[in-house]
Amino acid sequence: MQMGWTRSAVLALGLFATAGSALAETKARDVLKTYADIAQAMYGDAHTASLDLQKAVDALIKTPSEATLKAARQAWIDARPWYMHSEPYRFGNPVVDEWEGNVNSWPLDEGLIDYVDAASYGDKSDENPLYTLNVIANKTLKIGKETVDASVITPELLKDKLNGAMSSDANVAVGWHAVEFLLWGQDLNGTGPGAGDRPWTDYSLTQCTHGNCDRRAAYLKVATDLLVSDLGDMAAWWAPGGKARADLEAKDDKAGIGTIFTGLGSLSFGELAGERIKLGLVLHDPEEEHDCFSDDTHHSYLNSERGIIAVWTASYKGRDGKLVTGPSLAQLSAEADPALAAAVDARMAETLQRFVKVQEEGDKPGGQRWDQLIGADNPAGNAMIQGLVDGLVAQTRALEAVIAKLGVEVKVQGSDSLKDVN
Image (cartoon, rainbow, N blue to C red; front, top):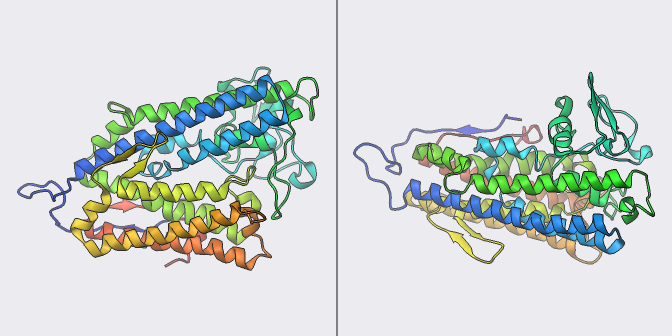
């Protein structure tokens, strides 16, 4: 959805290179380089973490057991934060946005991939003709007018034929959430406690449950390998000479700085506050939980906020413990207006603490996870989640004031869920 706020100005502030004017102490070009360096580091960390996930999935497929399934689930949870840090790069960088659909699309119609609980899921959808296609159970697939040979589950089948098939966003065949579903299965607990509970025997060739265990393992293997490959591609694209970095470097200073603000504002406002959080709160629908199979949403959204702060401050601590830092958007903004930049710092700090409280609630013994907090009969939990929306909107408004001061033109993604937000 693209009905966000747009704020532009044409103020001559001396912050960008123009004829006869000097750059401020913090050069925009240096800020852009740091931004690209951090992108390379974030996607590199996501890629290396996914290699650990790949090893755990391979172990599960080779020797299915309760222990190997548990280890694969933990590897998914351990890898996920490194990707979520990178989300501010999705918006404003076309090469990332075009790629993201293969990596983090959601929500997905589980019946496209595998068996589902018929009582809760139903047997058809007016919006998606492939609602119950069940690739794992069927070696021949009917996709629109095309009959597709699915006797062998291949990367091409999942990525090219099925992902986004028939123009339905719910046909998510690859990426983090396809792998998540294959590891956890459906969460049938509604807004009560508990995540998905797929049995390890769904991957056993000797004690197979729910049929087609060989094809289920093949699907999980292909989807995981694709995720690893895609994350490796993006890390390479942000390296020196890579196409994502080259696209950024080809922009002038104002356009480049506008790219960074577009990412921060769009993720903060339209995506996180609106499409992910407010919509689920309005509907009280556990299906609107981002990591709905694993119940790990409280960690994922916290790490998206951490990614926003890392990009704003140009300070990122990588998986290896090394700090990637340099001239920052925060510094550039403070040189234009210290008070406005300080307001962004304050709003981000406040919002981060709200996410931390939700994370602590979800992790404590007997605590409530995201799907419980958004339940219709949970006013206290709803208030916690609404606090996240309020914090994200406030930090976006603080960013908007800096954008106007800098004279940068951006268009931030909006959300119908926030259409009444001033």
